[in-house]
Image (tube, rainbow, N blue to C red; front, top):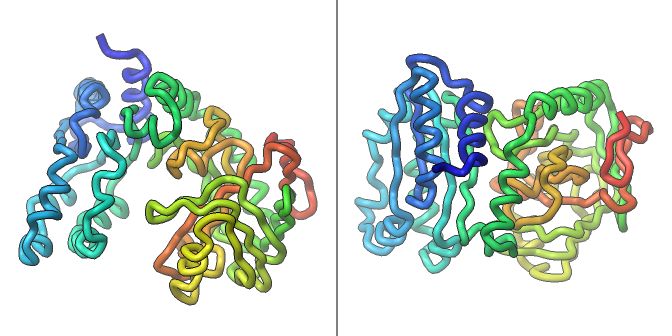
Amino acid sequence: MADPRVEELARILVRHSLGVKRGETVLISSSSELAKPLVLEVYREVMEAGAHPMTSISFEETQNIFYEKASEQQLLNFPRIKHYEAKNIDCVVNIRAPLNKKALSNIDPGKVGARSKVLMPIMETIVNKKRWVLCNYPTNALAQEADMSLAEYEDFLFGATNIDWKSVKKEEMKLKRLLDKGSEVRIVGEDTDLTLSIRGRKAIACYGSNNMPDGEVFMSPVENSAEGYIYYEMPAIYQAREVTGIRLRFRKGKVVEASADKNEEFLLSMLDTDRGARYLGELGIGVNYGISRFSKDILFDEKIGGTVHLAIGRSYEEAGGKNRSAIHWDMIKDLRKGGKLYIDGRLVQKDGRFRI
């Protein structure tokens, strides 16, 4: 008998996230056989919706074999059948269930990057033209990465996903309306006092359509507007590198001073990636109070209720952003202990709790 929490998550993915309709073709994809319980329940839900399920399940180890053995011709081969599949499906459920989070640690990153470029047309077809949702299924690898037992991680995951998403949307829309009308955001907290202009920018509410869990309202601030300084209590992870104790100072939108307690050299190298890397591409406000602890997984961490995240680098065109960069690095600021969030001088959040 299936875990009722898995059954509930499958219903949310199929009915809420994708809104699967009769006659549609739905691809259920995972790179690990460990996702089988959720794959089966999603398959069942798709069938009950009167749609047509397809599965694409592989073994995680095949990636290692591929990168170890691939010739240049194999590495650069474009999978036309996968592209055809992407163009002819209606929506995708992508389930992450890693056996080993470090499986590709010793693989040449140049090979991974080259393959990613080859596969980009397939990804762009799915991301830009199809309905899709990404989620995790609990595995020991994910639990270990989050410093939890498997049982603890299961409770953590389902507590973040199996919630009333209609209520989340309702609350997010209140915040969105304030941000859409607003001109300035001020973030105050430990060793932090930062102001950003949001004039003319559009806030986007996220309530489970693409990511599961979800629960954030984000926007791209005016590129030359950031003034002040910020300290990040939580580790910032990028390209599998963990940087702690980050402090940034902004002037006219640009990072003019930067330091870190750990891996400062990596932080500085990323800030020098290109011209846009020292400017902000995103301001996100986490509203999922089912997520209360840091897990080293940005899918969860940027949604923590009572936090904000600011991304250096590439902005979002759909939010009016104009910053261009090869990087987009989310850094999370905890406001739950003494933090304050203001919109046009109005206190809208204190100690991580909204006042709207």
